[in-house]
Image 1 (cartoon, rainbow, N blue to C red):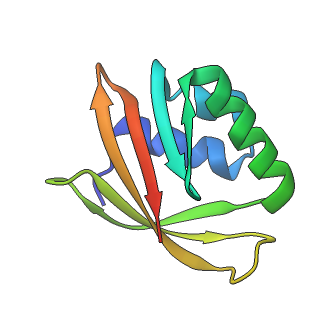
Image 2 (image 1 turned 60 degrees about the vertical axis):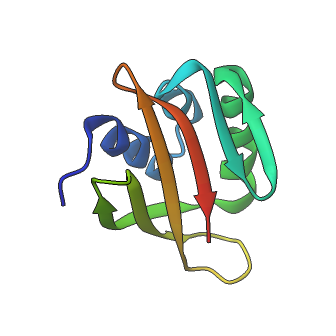
Image 3 (image 1 turned 90 degrees about the horizontal axis):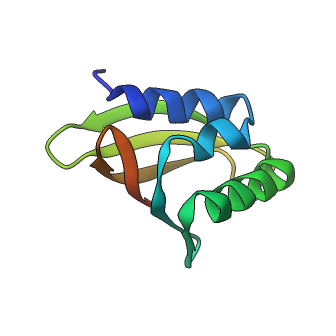
Length: 105
C-alpha cells in the first residue's frame, strides 16, 4: 500500500498514542471532523486526540488507500464499544501536511 508520508506519520503517532506528534501532522488551521464534532487548529486537534487516546486507546491498522480520493480505510481497535471497526479517513492535504480530516464509519 502506497501511503503518503504524512499519513504514515499519522498512523505511527496514533499507534504510539503520541498526541503531539499526531497534531504535528496537521497545518496550523487544519480541521478534523469526528463523531459529529469539528476540531479546529493544531492545539484543539492535539487536545481532542489526547482525550480520545486516554479514553479509547485506539490503534489503527491500514487496510486500503484510495490515492484518487485520498481515503484511508483502517481497522480501529481499542476500548470503545464495537471494537474493532473499520473507519474511513478522508484527507485533504496542503504543503505536505493534513489540512482536513473527516473520519467516517
